Length: 403
Image (cartoon, rainbow, N blue to C red; front, side, top):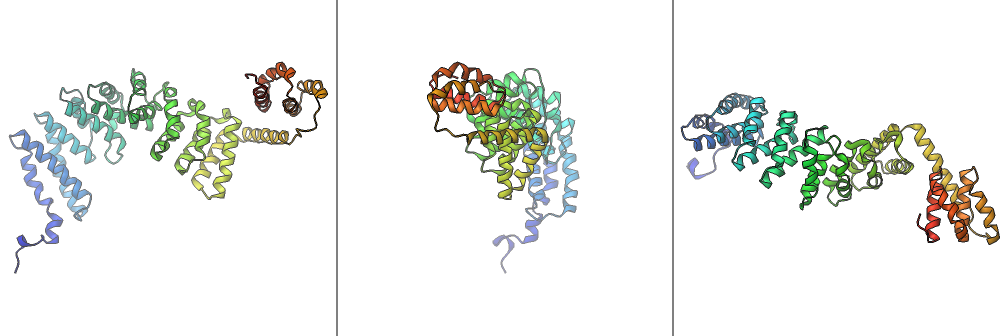
Protein backbone atom coordinates (compact mmCIF):
# COMPACT_ATOMS: atom_id res chain seq x y z
CA UNK A 1 0.00 0.00 0.00
CA UNK A 2 1.33 3.42 -0.94
CA UNK A 3 1.93 5.84 1.90
CA UNK A 4 0.49 9.35 2.06
CA UNK A 5 3.95 10.74 1.46
CA UNK A 6 3.99 9.07 -1.96
CA UNK A 7 0.68 10.54 -3.08
CA UNK A 8 -1.43 13.65 -2.65
CA UNK A 9 -2.58 14.39 0.92
CA UNK A 10 -6.09 13.20 1.70
CA UNK A 11 -8.86 15.81 1.29
CA UNK A 12 -9.52 16.17 5.03
CA UNK A 13 -5.84 16.99 5.59
CA UNK A 14 -5.87 19.68 2.88
CA UNK A 15 -9.07 21.07 4.32
CA UNK A 16 -7.55 21.69 7.73
CA UNK A 17 -3.90 22.11 6.78
CA UNK A 18 -3.76 25.86 7.44
CA UNK A 19 -5.62 25.63 10.72
CA UNK A 20 -2.95 23.32 12.10
CA UNK A 21 -0.41 26.10 11.68
CA UNK A 22 -2.25 28.60 13.83
CA UNK A 23 -0.94 27.74 17.28
CA UNK A 24 2.71 27.37 16.19
CA UNK A 25 2.47 30.70 14.36
CA UNK A 26 0.94 32.39 17.37
CA UNK A 27 3.83 31.09 19.46
CA UNK A 28 6.29 32.36 16.83
CA UNK A 29 4.74 35.83 17.03
CA UNK A 30 6.28 36.05 20.53
CA UNK A 31 9.78 35.07 19.35
CA UNK A 32 12.72 37.22 20.60
CA UNK A 33 13.82 37.84 17.00
CA UNK A 34 11.81 40.57 15.31
CA UNK A 35 12.22 38.97 11.86
CA UNK A 36 10.53 35.84 13.18
CA UNK A 37 7.70 37.85 14.72
CA UNK A 38 7.14 39.74 11.47
CA UNK A 39 7.14 36.51 9.45
CA UNK A 40 4.76 34.81 11.87
CA UNK A 41 2.23 37.65 11.81
CA UNK A 42 2.44 37.86 8.03
CA UNK A 43 1.82 34.10 7.82
CA UNK A 44 -1.16 34.33 10.19
CA UNK A 45 -2.70 37.00 7.97
CA UNK A 46 -2.13 34.80 4.94
CA UNK A 47 -3.82 31.86 6.68
CA UNK A 48 -6.77 34.11 7.47
CA UNK A 49 -7.09 35.20 3.85
CA UNK A 50 -7.00 31.58 2.74
CA UNK A 51 -9.58 30.14 5.09
CA UNK A 52 -11.79 33.22 5.00
CA UNK A 53 -11.86 32.87 1.23
CA UNK A 54 -13.23 29.35 1.73
CA UNK A 55 -10.48 27.87 -0.43
CA UNK A 56 -10.32 24.89 1.90
CA UNK A 57 -14.00 24.68 2.74
CA UNK A 58 -13.59 25.96 6.29
CA UNK A 59 -16.81 26.02 8.30
CA UNK A 60 -18.01 29.18 10.06
CA UNK A 61 -17.52 27.55 13.45
CA UNK A 62 -13.86 26.90 12.65
CA UNK A 63 -13.47 30.48 11.45
CA UNK A 64 -14.88 31.78 14.72
CA UNK A 65 -12.57 29.51 16.65
CA UNK A 66 -9.60 30.92 14.74
CA UNK A 67 -10.73 34.56 14.76
CA UNK A 68 -10.54 35.16 18.51
CA UNK A 69 -6.94 33.96 19.14
CA UNK A 70 -5.72 35.62 15.95
CA UNK A 71 -7.32 38.95 16.86
CA UNK A 72 -5.91 38.76 20.37
CA UNK A 73 -2.42 37.99 19.01
CA UNK A 74 -2.46 40.84 16.50
CA UNK A 75 -3.75 43.37 19.03
CA UNK A 76 -1.00 42.36 21.40
CA UNK A 77 1.52 42.87 18.58
CA UNK A 78 0.32 46.48 18.15
CA UNK A 79 2.33 47.23 21.28
CA UNK A 80 5.47 45.46 20.07
CA UNK A 81 8.78 47.28 20.55
CA UNK A 82 9.53 46.97 16.82
CA UNK A 83 7.76 49.29 14.38
CA UNK A 84 7.72 46.72 11.55
CA UNK A 85 5.95 44.21 13.78
CA UNK A 86 3.42 46.87 14.76
CA UNK A 87 2.65 47.75 11.13
CA UNK A 88 2.36 44.08 10.17
CA UNK A 89 -0.15 43.59 12.97
CA UNK A 90 -2.10 46.72 12.01
CA UNK A 91 -2.37 45.52 8.41
CA UNK A 92 -3.62 42.15 9.62
CA UNK A 93 -6.22 43.69 11.91
CA UNK A 94 -7.53 45.90 9.12
CA UNK A 95 -8.07 42.78 7.02
CA UNK A 96 -9.92 41.22 9.96
CA UNK A 97 -12.24 44.25 10.08
CA UNK A 98 -10.78 45.28 13.44
CA UNK A 99 -9.36 48.64 12.39
CA UNK A 100 -9.96 50.64 15.55
CA UNK A 101 -8.29 53.86 16.70
CA UNK A 102 -5.20 52.03 17.91
CA UNK A 103 -4.67 50.50 14.47
CA UNK A 104 -5.06 53.92 12.87
CA UNK A 105 -2.46 55.42 15.20
CA UNK A 106 0.06 52.74 14.19
CA UNK A 107 -0.41 53.74 10.55
CA UNK A 108 -0.12 57.43 11.45
CA UNK A 109 3.23 56.75 13.14
CA UNK A 110 4.36 54.76 10.10
CA UNK A 111 3.31 57.63 7.82
CA UNK A 112 5.71 59.90 9.71
CA UNK A 113 8.58 57.41 9.86
CA UNK A 114 11.91 58.05 8.13
CA UNK A 115 11.69 54.62 6.48
CA UNK A 116 10.13 54.97 3.01
CA UNK A 117 8.73 51.45 3.01
CA UNK A 118 6.74 52.15 6.17
CA UNK A 119 5.39 55.42 4.79
CA UNK A 120 4.39 53.59 1.63
CA UNK A 121 2.62 50.87 3.58
CA UNK A 122 0.78 53.48 5.65
CA UNK A 123 -0.35 55.36 2.54
CA UNK A 124 -1.47 52.09 0.92
CA UNK A 125 -3.37 51.13 4.09
CA UNK A 126 -5.15 54.51 4.09
CA UNK A 127 -6.06 53.99 0.44
CA UNK A 128 -7.37 50.45 0.94
CA UNK A 129 -9.04 51.46 4.18
CA UNK A 130 -11.25 53.88 2.24
CA UNK A 131 -11.71 52.06 -1.08
CA UNK A 132 -12.34 48.59 0.38
CA UNK A 133 -15.64 48.74 2.26
CA UNK A 134 -15.11 45.20 3.57
CA UNK A 135 -12.08 46.27 5.60
CA UNK A 136 -12.63 49.96 6.41
CA UNK A 137 -10.34 52.36 8.18
CA UNK A 138 -12.92 55.08 8.77
CA UNK A 139 -10.51 57.36 10.67
CA UNK A 140 -8.86 58.28 7.34
CA UNK A 141 -11.83 60.56 6.67
CA UNK A 142 -11.31 62.55 9.86
CA UNK A 143 -9.35 65.80 10.07
CA UNK A 144 -6.44 63.85 11.54
CA UNK A 145 -6.49 61.41 8.63
CA UNK A 146 -6.63 64.15 6.01
CA UNK A 147 -3.76 65.96 7.70
CA UNK A 148 -1.58 62.85 7.44
CA UNK A 149 -2.58 62.27 3.82
CA UNK A 150 -1.71 65.86 2.97
CA UNK A 151 1.80 65.32 4.30
CA UNK A 152 2.09 62.05 2.34
CA UNK A 153 1.02 63.85 -0.84
CA UNK A 154 4.18 65.93 -0.50
CA UNK A 155 6.48 62.98 0.25
CA UNK A 156 9.81 62.62 -1.57
CA UNK A 157 8.79 59.15 -2.73
CA UNK A 158 6.67 58.88 -5.87
CA UNK A 159 5.21 55.60 -4.66
CA UNK A 160 4.11 57.17 -1.37
CA UNK A 161 2.61 60.17 -3.17
CA UNK A 162 0.65 57.97 -5.55
CA UNK A 163 -0.79 55.83 -2.75
CA UNK A 164 -1.79 58.97 -0.84
CA UNK A 165 -3.35 60.51 -3.96
CA UNK A 166 -5.50 57.41 -4.49
CA UNK A 167 -6.55 57.56 -0.85
CA UNK A 168 -7.59 61.21 -1.15
CA UNK A 169 -9.43 60.36 -4.36
CA UNK A 170 -11.38 57.61 -2.59
CA UNK A 171 -12.26 59.93 0.29
CA UNK A 172 -13.35 62.88 -1.84
CA UNK A 173 -15.48 60.78 -4.18
CA UNK A 174 -17.46 59.51 -1.20
CA UNK A 175 -17.91 62.86 0.56
CA UNK A 176 -16.92 66.52 0.43
CA UNK A 177 -13.58 67.20 2.06
CA UNK A 178 -11.82 70.31 3.25
CA UNK A 179 -8.31 70.69 4.58
CA UNK A 180 -5.98 73.71 4.55
CA UNK A 181 -3.59 73.50 1.59
CA UNK A 182 -5.16 70.37 0.10
CA UNK A 183 -6.59 72.05 -3.00
CA UNK A 184 -3.28 73.73 -3.78
CA UNK A 185 -1.33 70.46 -3.54
CA UNK A 186 -3.86 68.52 -5.62
CA UNK A 187 -3.94 71.24 -8.29
CA UNK A 188 -0.20 70.78 -8.81
CA UNK A 189 -0.81 67.11 -9.60
CA UNK A 190 -3.00 68.19 -12.53
CA UNK A 191 0.22 69.18 -14.32
CA UNK A 192 1.92 65.81 -13.77
CA UNK A 193 3.46 64.07 -16.76
CA UNK A 194 1.61 60.82 -15.95
CA UNK A 195 -2.01 60.64 -17.22
CA UNK A 196 -3.03 58.37 -14.33
CA UNK A 197 -1.77 60.89 -11.78
CA UNK A 198 -3.61 63.74 -13.50
CA UNK A 199 -6.79 61.65 -13.53
CA UNK A 200 -6.53 60.76 -9.83
CA UNK A 201 -5.91 64.41 -8.97
CA UNK A 202 -8.96 65.52 -10.95
CA UNK A 203 -11.18 62.91 -9.30
CA UNK A 204 -9.88 63.98 -5.90
CA UNK A 205 -10.43 67.69 -6.57
CA UNK A 206 -14.04 67.05 -7.57
CA UNK A 207 -14.83 66.52 -3.89
CA UNK A 208 -12.75 69.34 -2.42
CA UNK A 209 -14.73 72.38 -1.33
CA UNK A 210 -14.11 75.41 -3.51
CA UNK A 211 -11.56 73.71 -5.77
CA UNK A 212 -13.57 71.43 -8.03
CA UNK A 213 -13.60 73.69 -11.10
CA UNK A 214 -9.81 73.40 -11.45
CA UNK A 215 -10.39 69.75 -12.34
CA UNK A 216 -12.95 70.42 -15.08
CA UNK A 217 -10.60 70.37 -18.12
CA UNK A 218 -9.18 66.99 -17.09
CA UNK A 219 -12.61 65.55 -16.20
CA UNK A 220 -14.07 66.65 -19.56
CA UNK A 221 -11.15 65.00 -21.33
CA UNK A 222 -11.62 61.80 -19.31
CA UNK A 223 -15.33 61.73 -20.14
CA UNK A 224 -14.27 61.06 -23.74
CA UNK A 225 -11.51 58.57 -22.86
CA UNK A 226 -11.48 55.15 -24.51
CA UNK A 227 -11.23 53.53 -21.06
CA UNK A 228 -14.75 52.80 -19.81
CA UNK A 229 -13.70 52.91 -16.16
CA UNK A 230 -12.27 56.42 -16.59
CA UNK A 231 -15.41 57.62 -18.33
CA UNK A 232 -17.55 56.19 -15.53
CA UNK A 233 -15.37 57.81 -12.89
CA UNK A 234 -15.39 61.16 -14.72
CA UNK A 235 -19.19 61.11 -15.01
CA UNK A 236 -19.43 60.25 -11.30
CA UNK A 237 -17.11 63.13 -10.38
CA UNK A 238 -19.00 65.64 -12.54
CA UNK A 239 -22.27 64.50 -10.99
CA UNK A 240 -20.78 65.04 -7.54
CA UNK A 241 -19.70 68.58 -8.48
CA UNK A 242 -23.30 69.64 -9.06
CA UNK A 243 -23.77 73.18 -10.38
CA UNK A 244 -19.99 73.73 -10.39
CA UNK A 245 -19.82 71.46 -13.44
CA UNK A 246 -21.84 73.89 -15.63
CA UNK A 247 -18.95 74.48 -18.10
CA UNK A 248 -19.00 70.72 -18.78
CA UNK A 249 -22.61 70.69 -20.05
CA UNK A 250 -21.61 70.04 -23.72
CA UNK A 251 -19.47 67.09 -22.63
CA UNK A 252 -22.26 65.75 -20.41
CA UNK A 253 -24.72 66.06 -23.29
CA UNK A 254 -22.37 64.00 -25.46
CA UNK A 255 -22.08 61.52 -22.60
CA UNK A 256 -25.80 60.78 -22.89
CA UNK A 257 -24.90 58.89 -26.08
CA UNK A 258 -22.07 56.87 -24.53
CA UNK A 259 -21.94 53.13 -25.21
CA UNK A 260 -21.74 52.39 -21.46
CA UNK A 261 -25.01 52.59 -19.55
CA UNK A 262 -23.37 53.77 -16.31
CA UNK A 263 -21.84 56.73 -18.13
CA UNK A 264 -25.17 57.68 -19.71
CA UNK A 265 -27.01 57.44 -16.41
CA UNK A 266 -24.41 59.43 -14.49
CA UNK A 267 -24.29 62.14 -17.16
CA UNK A 268 -28.07 62.42 -16.94
CA UNK A 269 -27.89 62.76 -13.16
CA UNK A 270 -25.14 65.36 -13.51
CA UNK A 271 -27.32 67.44 -15.85
CA UNK A 272 -30.17 67.16 -13.36
CA UNK A 273 -27.94 68.76 -10.70
CA UNK A 274 -28.29 72.11 -12.50
CA UNK A 275 -31.98 72.23 -11.66
CA UNK A 276 -33.85 75.25 -13.02
CA UNK A 277 -30.52 76.64 -14.29
CA UNK A 278 -30.29 73.89 -16.93
CA UNK A 279 -30.31 75.34 -20.45
CA UNK A 280 -32.38 74.25 -23.45
CA UNK A 281 -29.50 72.24 -24.90
CA UNK A 282 -29.32 70.09 -21.77
CA UNK A 283 -33.09 69.70 -21.47
CA UNK A 284 -33.64 68.74 -25.09
CA UNK A 285 -30.71 66.31 -24.96
CA UNK A 286 -32.28 64.67 -21.89
CA UNK A 287 -35.64 64.40 -23.64
CA UNK A 288 -33.99 62.76 -26.64
CA UNK A 289 -32.05 60.42 -24.36
CA UNK A 290 -35.29 59.47 -22.60
CA UNK A 291 -36.89 58.55 -25.91
CA UNK A 292 -33.87 56.49 -26.97
CA UNK A 293 -33.70 54.72 -23.62
CA UNK A 294 -37.35 53.71 -23.83
CA UNK A 295 -36.89 52.44 -27.38
CA UNK A 296 -33.91 50.32 -26.28
CA UNK A 297 -35.51 49.20 -22.99
CA UNK A 298 -32.59 50.82 -21.19
CA UNK A 299 -34.20 51.13 -17.77
CA UNK A 300 -31.20 52.51 -15.89
CA UNK A 301 -30.72 55.43 -18.27
CA UNK A 302 -34.45 56.03 -18.50
CA UNK A 303 -34.80 56.25 -14.71
CA UNK A 304 -31.79 58.59 -14.45
CA UNK A 305 -33.13 60.87 -17.19
CA UNK A 306 -36.58 61.03 -15.61
CA UNK A 307 -34.93 61.87 -12.29
CA UNK A 308 -32.91 64.64 -13.95
CA UNK A 309 -35.94 66.14 -15.71
CA UNK A 310 -37.89 66.09 -12.45
CA UNK A 311 -35.01 67.92 -10.72
CA UNK A 312 -34.99 70.56 -13.47
CA UNK A 313 -38.72 71.10 -13.08
CA UNK A 314 -41.81 70.49 -15.18
CA UNK A 315 -42.29 74.17 -15.99
CA UNK A 316 -38.71 74.62 -17.15
CA UNK A 317 -38.87 71.49 -19.30
CA UNK A 318 -42.17 72.55 -20.89
CA UNK A 319 -40.75 75.99 -21.73
CA UNK A 320 -37.70 74.41 -23.37
CA UNK A 321 -39.95 72.11 -25.41
CA UNK A 322 -42.01 75.10 -26.54
CA UNK A 323 -38.91 76.99 -27.63
CA UNK A 324 -37.64 73.92 -29.49
CA UNK A 325 -40.95 73.62 -31.34
CA UNK A 326 -40.74 77.30 -32.29
CA UNK A 327 -37.23 76.84 -33.67
CA UNK A 328 -38.36 73.92 -35.79
CA UNK A 329 -41.25 75.99 -37.14
CA UNK A 330 -38.83 78.78 -38.08
CA UNK A 331 -36.75 76.31 -40.08
CA UNK A 332 -39.74 75.70 -42.36
CA UNK A 333 -39.78 79.35 -43.37
CA UNK A 334 -39.13 79.43 -47.19
CA UNK A 335 -35.71 80.65 -48.30
CA UNK A 336 -36.43 81.25 -51.96
CA UNK A 337 -38.13 83.91 -54.05
CA UNK A 338 -36.70 86.87 -52.11
CA UNK A 339 -35.77 90.00 -53.99
CA UNK A 340 -33.04 92.55 -53.13
CA UNK A 341 -35.62 95.34 -53.02
CA UNK A 342 -37.23 93.56 -50.04
CA UNK A 343 -34.16 94.08 -47.85
CA UNK A 344 -35.51 97.27 -46.18
CA UNK A 345 -38.70 95.38 -45.26
CA UNK A 346 -36.78 92.51 -43.68
CA UNK A 347 -34.51 94.91 -41.82
CA UNK A 348 -37.61 96.53 -40.35
CA UNK A 349 -38.84 93.08 -39.28
CA UNK A 350 -35.69 92.67 -37.21
CA UNK A 351 -37.40 95.01 -34.72
CA UNK A 352 -40.65 93.03 -34.56
CA UNK A 353 -41.91 92.12 -31.09
CA UNK A 354 -42.47 88.52 -32.20
CA UNK A 355 -39.28 86.44 -31.97
CA UNK A 356 -40.55 84.21 -34.78
CA UNK A 357 -40.71 87.21 -37.11
CA UNK A 358 -37.23 88.38 -36.10
CA UNK A 359 -35.86 84.89 -36.77
CA UNK A 360 -37.50 84.78 -40.21
CA UNK A 361 -36.09 88.20 -41.03
CA UNK A 362 -32.60 87.04 -40.07
CA UNK A 363 -32.99 83.99 -42.34
CA UNK A 364 -34.18 86.12 -45.25
CA UNK A 365 -31.40 88.68 -44.92
CA UNK A 366 -28.86 85.90 -44.72
CA UNK A 367 -30.24 84.34 -47.90
CA UNK A 368 -30.08 87.73 -49.65
CA UNK A 369 -26.51 88.34 -48.44
CA UNK A 370 -27.56 91.74 -47.13
CA UNK A 371 -24.30 93.28 -45.92
CA UNK A 372 -26.15 96.49 -45.01
CA UNK A 373 -27.95 94.54 -42.29
CA UNK A 374 -24.71 93.74 -40.44
CA UNK A 375 -25.12 96.47 -37.76
CA UNK A 376 -28.66 95.30 -36.97
CA UNK A 377 -27.60 91.68 -36.93
CA UNK A 378 -24.89 92.56 -34.44
CA UNK A 379 -27.57 94.09 -32.23
CA UNK A 380 -29.46 90.80 -32.32
CA UNK A 381 -26.50 89.03 -30.78
CA UNK A 382 -27.99 90.34 -27.51
CA UNK A 383 -31.59 89.40 -28.38
CA UNK A 384 -33.81 87.95 -25.66
CA UNK A 385 -34.44 84.87 -27.80
CA UNK A 386 -31.55 82.39 -27.85
CA UNK A 387 -32.46 81.03 -31.28
CA UNK A 388 -32.51 84.55 -32.77
CA UNK A 389 -29.06 85.17 -31.28
CA UNK A 390 -27.73 81.94 -32.78
CA UNK A 391 -29.19 82.64 -36.21
CA UNK A 392 -27.81 86.18 -36.20
CA UNK A 393 -24.35 84.86 -35.34
CA UNK A 394 -24.57 82.26 -38.13
CA UNK A 395 -25.59 84.88 -40.73
CA UNK A 396 -22.83 87.26 -39.62
CA UNK A 397 -20.34 84.43 -40.05
CA UNK A 398 -21.75 83.74 -43.54
CA UNK A 399 -21.30 87.42 -44.39
CA UNK A 400 -17.68 87.23 -43.31
CA UNK A 401 -18.18 89.12 -40.06
CA UNK A 402 -16.95 88.11 -36.62
CA UNK A 403 -19.87 87.61 -34.23
